[in-house]
Length: 248
Image (cartoon, rainbow, N blue to C red; front, side):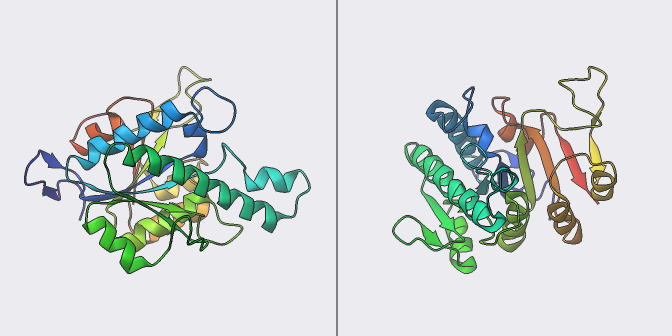
């Protein structure tokens, strides 16, 4: 399935019926240099709500870089496995913040962790997660894959495949994939579409190599768009907006 795969019974035609939204932990910081900015979290929650209102089933993966990034801890002398586990716990904190913002909008949400912590969130059980999506609950997958040495990009691609998502939506600071940093180079060129192999060969920085390879091997498109553009997420699903599609 792919573009124009269905129509919600009560709303407009949408490009996809089930998607995964991947955002960085830094996206939750707002203009701060660290941590969570509740108004920014609430704004992103409203974007998710607007897409859910189209009848789209949504799951999410949020990075942890606004609190702790495993690679940085490792670079400063911390043992890599421990640093990565700390980064995974940071993603749980972000997931709980997003859950709170979504439930303030009366959207039923489940935080599902790859590291069991039953008092806080559900353990990851694929069939149960799929059932939540079928019931129109938003599932936020936390703690990465549960393994060190894997990024949240890889976790997002893994979960999107497991959930049968039709696309990954990667929300960033810019409205697509460029051949160079558009904030530094005014002549930077935006791609409308780009292949998985081009992303790897040209080091375009969409996701890390293992995530791109996993998406390529399962023919899972990645839509790169600006999370800072109000209504951008909903617009793309309605067939509008500016974005880059990574495909085979």
